Length: 170
Ligand SMILES: [Zn+2]
Image 1 (cartoon, protein in one colour):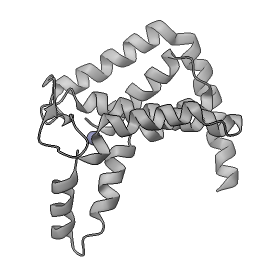
Image 2 (image 1 turned 90 degrees about the vertical axis):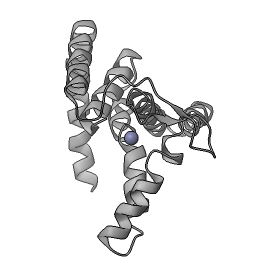
Image 3 (image 1 turned 180 degrees about the vertical axis):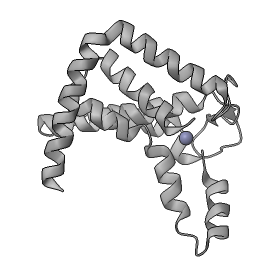
């Protein structure tokens, strides 16, 4: 799945669960984290060819096992840092988990088990970047707008506020 689909899915889920704005922003980050992890690891390669080789080998392996993200979610629930950090951790873990769920819709799927990635979970509904994926994306946005139109506008405002205040920090 494309990142835009992952981020839309995670944000829609976080809004549906009525999470605070910080959690929603973090869910958009967590939504792309599994792929970012694979990309970062592949950068260990010394040249583009080697990097591609590493990426092909590790992509949708450990970073895409649902269990790690489910554990992260449980840990975030159990851990009690200051409120904003807790919201952010919860959102990040939820975003990661939603990424795995969405990748499970594609033919390549995600690993069923943590250390052997051969057995895959796949619903084989749509290929990454296919028309099917974009139809799915539009349906998610429409469903979200219908169900949570007002809340969505409210959260967008809050998310914009957080992003603006983050700019001041970095
Ligand atoms: Zn992925």
